[in-house]
Image (cartoon, rainbow, N blue to C red; front, side):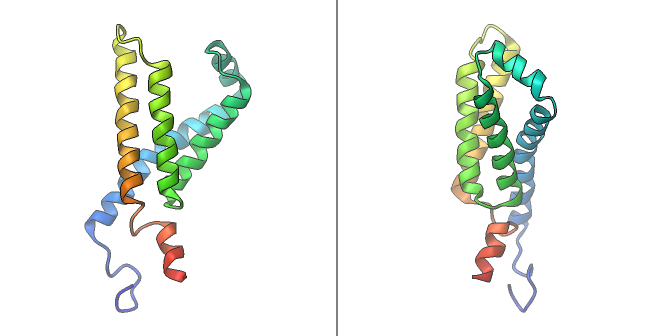
Length: 138
């Protein structure tokens, strides 16, 4: 906080980091909510892939908690690391039929999102985050 103004030291990179965090978080929050709203259908579809209901519940919790942590910038490094590992796992477990162009695209997309998550884990949430707000108050 410079000169008593909370955002006087804000840089363009801080705004770009916020936008990037929100874009990365959106897919996980949306998917977690979609799975929650259609839980029975999701459970049936996941059972066909060998995924149990407890694992589906854990996936929904990870997507929502990780997505919100990144969007809000609270424990974003942890959320980004967990979601990055989730993306790598999803790619390696479910999208390895490279004869299918669609599966290859999903594999590459999951790897790209994981890369973005690991970059976020390395740099942190930035100035426009709840972590920074709480840090300033201490």
